[in-house]
Image 1 (tube, rainbow, N blue to C red):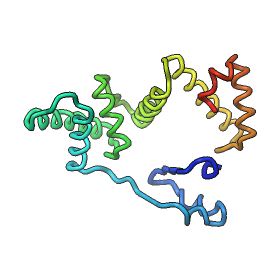
Image 2: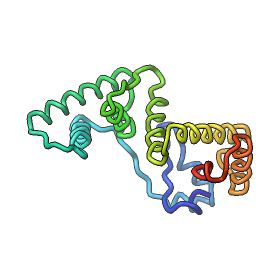
Image 3: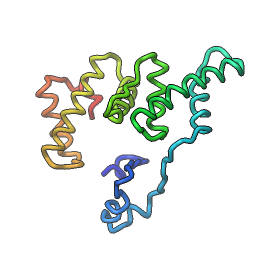
Image 4: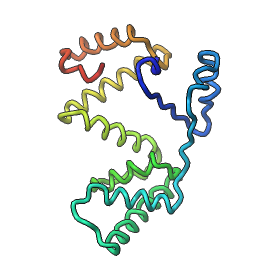
Length: 187
């Protein structure tokens, strides 16, 4: 269904996932043959340093001299290393980038157990923020996504077709008294 609606489909799986085996069963293995497979590896100290330096200089209004840039990179790198070390998070870019966002926003990066969920929340909220005009709109989108996830769980489904999606959207609009205009971001 995703391939019929999207130009690109990205499938992410952890160390214990068997994405290739699952996809091999779909369409008699033809789907896997059409896909390129990549592995996102952990960043070592050198690449992590480069990522942090690029993040700091990205969109900077003033040029850093070499000494002040090195000092700032070292400071951020120490914080990131501390966060990664406390929770034994892997040094994948998907975890480091939200940490950099939080550090830039001068907000505390959670180092409690369950940090994966916290980092995913940062990524989701940042993405929703780009397409939202207000906090209320972000809350509305979070409500929609939560309801949809619950719907899929109750249906014991991982996907739904366009007819089911339309029916869900209609019920959601009625339940939350939304107009088509206020719910258009959900479709």
